[in-house]
Image (cartoon, rainbow, N blue to C red):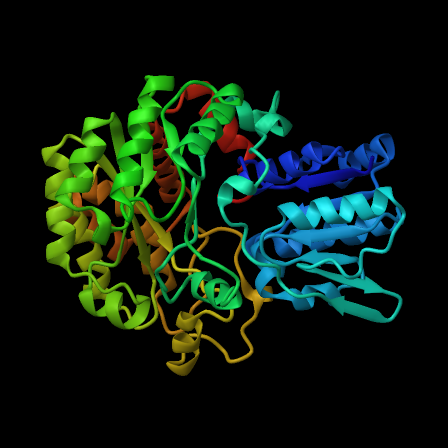
Length: 469
C-alpha cells in the first residue's frame, strides 16, 4: 500500500480531489487530505503521516502560493511532490521548478492509481501516461492518455476526505455529472484543453443516469441537507438524459437543486422541465450587456433579446437566477459597462454577481488585450491577482471607477431607483474601506440566499476563504 497526502489551500469542495480519493482507495492505497496553507501545520501533517507522495491540485490563481509551500516542504522532506489540475495541465513548464518532481496533465484518476501502484511495488514511474517526471537531469514527458470513456468506468466519487471539515459543514452537496464544454469563450482555458485532447475520445461525456444517482448519493452522505448544486457546464444539451436524471433524483431525495446553464440552452422546454423537477435556481453567464463586447471580445455570440427571453421564461416558471457578469474588459467603454448593469435590471436578475476581469495567459482575450495596449507583451502568471475583487490589472482603464462600480453593482440592480445616486457616488468619491465592506455584505447575503445556505456555516466558510475573496 502506498500513501498520498493531498494538500488543499482553498477552503472549498473539489470534485477532482474526491475522485482522486476514490481512485486511491479503490486500488488499495491510502489517501489523506490536509486543508490549510500554514506551513507549520503542513510539516506536522507530513511528519505524522509519512506519505510516499505529496500532491497539490493547482489552479492558476493559487500557483504562486503553492510554489511557496512546495519550496518550504522540500527544505525538510525528500518526498516527491506532484502537481495536478488546470495549471500544470496547460502550463507544464512548471515542472522546471526545483521543488516540483512530477506533474499530471489532464484527468488524474488512472494516472494516480498507476503511480501509487508503482511506488508500492518499488518500480519506476517515469513512463506513466499523463505524467511528466523529473529525474536527475531528465524530464520524462509522457503522452496524454485517452479520456475516460464511458465515465462510468471511473471509481465512484468519494467525498469522505472532507468529512468533519469546515468544507463539509458549510458547502452544499455537489454533483459533477458531465465533463467537457463545447464552447470556446475567449477568456477560458476550455478551448486549449479540448485541443489538447484531439483524437483522445469524446470531449463531452455524461455519467449514466444510474451512475449519476450513485454520485449524488455519495454527496448526500457528507454534506448537510441543502439544495444540491449541479456544477457541470452543459446541462440542456441532452434533454432526454436530463429528464431521466431528475425523475430518478426525486426518488432519492426531496431536496431542491440548482445548476449552471448557458443562455443558449435555456429554452422553454428545458426551463419547464427544470420547473417540473424542483429546480429553485439557475446560474447563467450574462458577462456583458454590450453585444459588441460579447461577440468581439468574449466570443459569446448571443444577443440581448435572447437574454431577456431567458429571464422571462425563468420568471414565468418561478425559477430564480444568478447572473455572472464581467466588468473592466479590454475595449469596454463606460457606456458598455453600464449596458451590463442595464441588461441585468431589465432581466430583473434575482442574484446579480460581478467580477473584475482577470486575464489568464495563453487565452485568446489576452492576445486581444496585448494587441490593443491593455497588457504588456511580457504579461505572465506573475501578474495575476489573488481575487477578482481586488481591482483591474489592465492598463488604460479608470481603476477607481471600475472598483467602485463593482462595489455597487449588485445594489443598483436590486434597487434600480438608486442608480442616479450611485452614479454620483462613483463619480465623486474614491473607493474606500466602507464601500468595500458594504459590497462584501451584499455579496455574502446574495450568495447565501442563492444557494439557500445555513447562516452560521456560511459565515465560517467566508472566514475560512477571507484570503481569496
